[in-house]
Length: 436
Image (cartoon, rainbow, N blue to C red; front, top):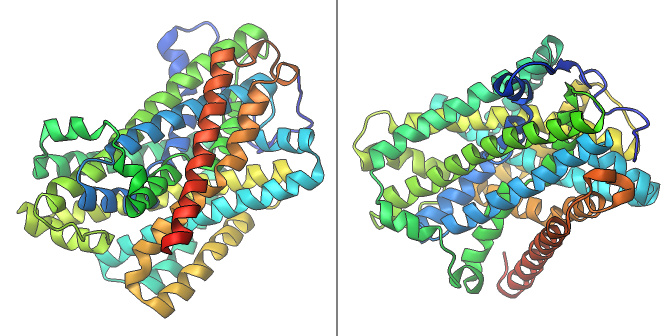
């Protein structure tokens, strides 16, 4: 079976103890964490833009896309964590080892594009939240977001468990805010249930397809596959067959619970938009700023807009933590370059800030939602470059040994990879015909 030359993120590799003689719940608790770091990417500000646009314009009909993409995410993250635990290497390292240096540089560039697109969503989301809460101009808010590197440095010095704890706390804040928003909006249960069943109009309507692909891009994050395959190795479990099987079992539970919470939050954003805006005939509400302004008067509840903005700020700040870790893993794995995390964070953030500042300066604040939507479609376009290697490696017995995918898992993985590639190709065709 494949063995790694050196671990990615060596400062936290196998640093967290897993009790061997304790019961189920103690062991599960030891594995809780990586799934939530991954889940953060599934509820970042990019999701807000796509979910708000989908709910306000198409009612509950795109809930089916959220459900489908979340199930895809659970499956792919399972493959990613299994790859990391079974081989002791992450997805980026295995790509370099099996595809060679030239192909690795190509894949690295596409992975960096995905991280930049994700970071653009985080920059804009945090800047919008600061604007809504404290009336800071968006351009100033965009620049202020670079300061989150100080928080990351502080947390990394304290230990990986502190990063996991702050991430889970921020997720709980987001979930609490939206639980209250849904209570205020009083959505209808039967139409919601109907919305989880797909309709043909999702493919036939170009604008609906654009938002649907954006939801997939915002939900199934390519860099999360690299991230998950590495951070599951922060646990110090036995490296024999029994230890790895147990690690895969508990890591899968952690991942699926966290991603189910992400599914609930994404669905809540879309349901809130449908129940508040679509139901009132405001199908034009796609801007996050408009949603903030309209929530309080339309729901008749003081502070509804503020809850929305607080959740948005928590979402944007949460995503910055995992983005830097993913960037380190991708850079170290693909091209064997190690740089200090704060330099990595500043480079990534500058790549996101530059296009954001240029667009905001030229097009004004009204361009933010379109930028968020486009960033998520760009993410979706990069997805195949991570999914195909993941499915290929986990289906290869010489790499995975006894942990190789069963036939039905290999088949499901390739079907999923084909669907993702096909949807993106169809989106390109539609967009070239109609224009972005």
